Image 1 (cartoon, chains in turn yellow, purple):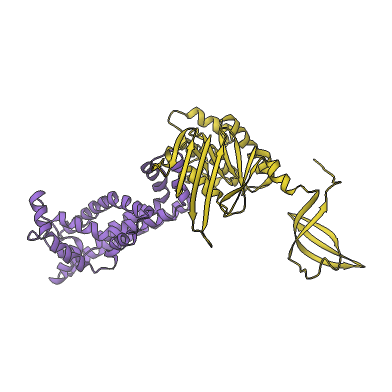
Image 2: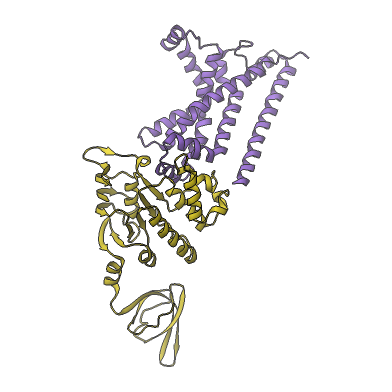
Length: 288
Length: 223
């Protein structure tokens, strides 16, 4: 069980931001953090890890006080039982894959290092240097290294954001396996709704330094959005007139779609504008 | 032609000793400056870099005053450690260490500051104390800067003149290093000997720098 009440003033780009979190996370749960950038997600992870100092509050993990401003307790990062996966991976460039992972392990845990290599599918790459690996491979090394010291708490800062869809799916599966296998409590920062649905039982939405929504992915995402309408954000690529209607070519995600618009719809609209399109969603065709 | 090799030997011994001492104190100092958040950081940086802009004779003059047995510091050292700093090899070493300090500290400090901070943080979250991080993660990743620091300190010590002249004087076999010997030989119109010393210093300097650039190129390719 993680219990935390923290506050911190951030003076980042633009206006100052006050972070205030009050949160309990069950043991062995996988909890996703989402929200716009600059909402304080990374700072929350960093404060848990002991890499940033809160201005006040306390952090108690499984009954052990990690931070308590009132009592002047502050456990340094190296004494906290955590695995942290950084956004930029932070692999040690001078060490091979095997050495990177073994660096985090306790002496005499060679068998565990081998098991991690197997679980993350890195056995064939163990003597390679990080500079020669692809993004997905680096990510798996970072994950394996974070687990090498058998932490109680795994913190992942947007670990999959830089990867393409195929790698993502693979790594999500690996992550789910490792979460179960190691009995971890995991906090995952993610912007990907699909990822959150797939991995997390609980999701916290952060906005401007506060937790504004807290619930299962279905509660958080579907209640606010499921309205019988499909809402999409699109960019106007072209407009052309055909007889009495106007055809708009729109970019939705990576797909291009032609829709029919009226004179009123395109009033004041220019190529390159972003628009919202919505459609009734009561008779969709669903494929696997 | 009968040329005394002792000044050359003395120069290289002095440079070697100075470089070793600088490695021992320069690496921790560079780390401290690179990662400290104290407000005194600019003051410390300015003090370390002073020898870069100060005329060597100024530094030599102050060291001469400080080392003099008539003054508090020199007297204290002579009484308690039984070492005379002025016009002695020990004094030369201390002067050279101060004079070459920025050449060791600056490359290492800037290389550390250019490393992603997440490397240090990752090592901390993996349960390692900072000295382990320094030895196994940070230093191996700034090898070119370490090499540059070592070589520049060495070469700079071989080439120093003003400080040595002020606090060491010109005692054969004790403080008469190659750069002083050149000056000495020219003054007594012995151009052949001066030429010899000058040539050796030029060739050695070129060889050292060539070695640095070749090695850096090789490391650059490997990375």
